[in-house]
Image (tube, rainbow, N blue to C red; front, side):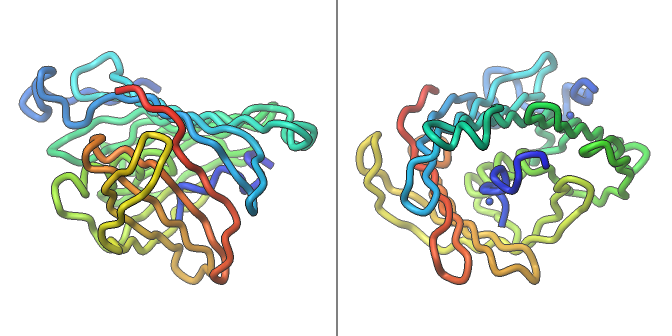
Length: 241
């Protein structure tokens, strides 16, 4: 199964980008969000299992972006996860909010690809050979674009309490809570961060992420727990902006 549950750490932690009129986006000299490349160590129950890389870069049209997440297993875990997990989200930023256009994921032969047809009000594609067609509501995100949306919402001081997120072949409701500031020691030095937790409605797994305002709200740490016990963690090692 694609990602085998490994890639959901960023939930309660794609056809060309849609075109928008010049009046709907910021000027190129004032990007809504700055590109970056971040490298993380990934731990499963305190055991290092691999690395994770996030890269945000501009796409071909003003106000459009490509966000890529790559996870690579290491050591004995490479035997079980021999293929990298790669996820990509193409999206636009309109009025300081993210509008996904296309999502793609792959792990070896397992793939998922979803197109967001906002004019038609549907998301369509294939997830692990299963046809997908879902009705879109305003603000719906994919499992990657949601992270950029949260970064923008924190920057603008307007993080909503709930989000609808397309995950595989379903749209799921998640509750987001801004838990407050925290001083965090990282490989980049001590940083002031904002902690945000997310949880799917009716699920006992909680994801907490630490976003650093001084770094453009790039996430510097993420931890997923279940029934209060830590399962999975990602901690930043390097950052290029």
